[in-house]
Amino acid sequence: MKNKLILFFCLLASISMFSQENNKSFTLQEAIDFALVNNRTAKNAALDIKAAEKQKWETTTIGLPQINGKIDYNNWLKQQVSLIPAEFFGGNPGEFSEVAFGTKQTMSGTVTLEQLIFDGSYLVGLQSAKVFLEISKNAKKKTDLEVRKAVINAYGNVLLAEESIEILERNINVLEKNLNETSKIYENGLGDEESVEQLQITLSAVKSNLSNTSRLKTLAYQMLNITLGTDINSKTILTDNLESLTTQNIVLTLLNSEEKVENSIDYKIAENDKTAKKLLLKLEKSKALPSLRGFINGAYAGNANDFDFLKKEQKWFGSSLLGVSMNIPIFSSGGRSAATQRAKINFEKAKENLTETEQKLKLQIASAKSDYQFAIEDYENKKQNLNLAERIEKKNQTKFFEGIASSFELRQAQTQLYSSQQEFLQAMLDVINKKAELETVLNKTNQ
Image (cartoon, rainbow, N blue to C red; front, side, top):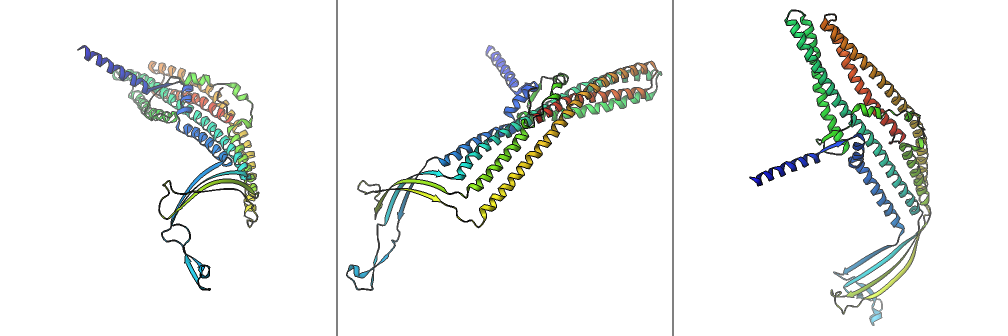
């Protein structure tokens, strides 16, 4: 019995630990930090940097010594015959003798050391590899900014759904209480049937809204899990609430932040593109320059009529060669010139794109600041409207049960309250999201 109890409690403990491991709780900042490591898009961007680093080294090694080995084995199934004047062997002039030179089988082994001495394309390639690595790093920063914004949006949508459900459930409780009281009044002959029906219509609409919001909450959690990089059906717990996050995200100093377009990641990416196009132009020009390579090799060759190359008696003859090879481009029928002109055109386009990006970013920053400021103002406005709507609904509820207000007036006040509640929640979410958008375009994440 004792052993069974121990086994039972061990099983409970393991189930509890498994449950805790699968339940992840996050503040908003913790969710962002988690996503920057686990989000699949962020992971791929990090892998792109590693690939760029390897490509940089791959390009570098082209100019380093290269050693290659080669083994050749030849077996004449039928040896080639040469014709030699017969008079060399005492024959008649004008006649030829058939002679097969060499042995039926040959084997040779060669080791060659090659070194690039000069190649303009290689020098440009080294610069391009560095730029490509910089492009990959900036792409990672851009990805991280987008992932951060996506997490903030997804986190906020979950909180919006959660708090909407809480409000709707409270509204349903109040409506059911009002409907119950109104029904009793009507049953006692002190009220009219329309009052009951108006409350039933309102209650039905709120319940329908609750069902829809519950479904949206499930989707919001799944979207958050995908953004975090976890399984879509993971149990995720959010520890922040919408109102506290809204307060934290009202940072008026952000509206006065310096607008340095050069700090924007989109500007840096456009600048990288301009640099890359400039290097491509240099590459095309460098193809008109000569290239110089040097090499030295050592070889051993053996000959035999039978495969005796593995025997000690086999004779091997050594040789070695030192040389330099220069490739000089002379005439390409205008091909190199056309390629250079095309690269020049692309470079000019990249410069125009950089200027356009700069202008668009200035507009984006101004627009993002305007949207953020409006979100803050709208939040304060919706907060006041909600307080007014709550007081109006409370007054109409009192008047209704005192027989002063009609059921239609009460329903109007209730509908206005429910609309104000949702507008206030949306206003809080807008503050959080608009701040994230402004921080993204400014390349600022620690406000």
